[in-house]
Image 1 (spheres, rainbow, N blue to C red):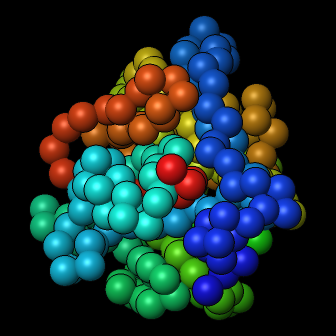
Image 2 (image 1 turned 180 degrees about the vertical axis):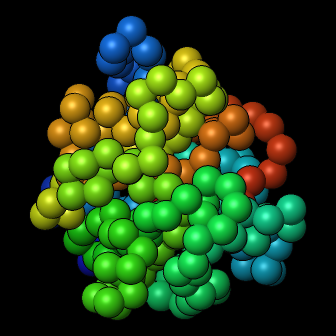
Length: 244
């Protein structure tokens, strides 16, 4: 049991467990919602299946699963691409168990637009790691989800992003600080290009590495902002768990 989970169960706090700090911002005339996570204090997890092995797929179903534990979501969003049966397209680890291997090769669609990456959650830190680097380092992630493309790689935008692109969607993703102490999640409230979305993480949020989760189906749960995006069932979901 991790320190954060033990504190949640016992109602203890060396600094209370907190929900994400979410806020609406505007950058380059485009509206976004940004949620900032202190990875040492907040209980950040990935969710895919319930206790019976069924796809959770909805924020409400996760809250229903957490409720008997005296807990709830303080923030959540979709966290990686998935097949029609909601299984992850790429690498996926939940509670330390690998559910899907790393996919290192290029392929069709955004996921295969290399370099892509892995969002890795450990007990007191979280990191966006480029896939080949991830395979070389083999970090011991409690939770991990692979998606793509990378938005920012060591301070540089993905080399395939075009400033004059006309491909515009609602998009969401995550970036992390170099020391892993903060994970910042963002979802656009206006349609954006990859180049514009990458610049949000690099130039506004000042994060050295950032990863694209998805577009068009992007959804956010941020109760402090009275936001609970509805829609069809999702695959992997990332969320902060707080005491109810």
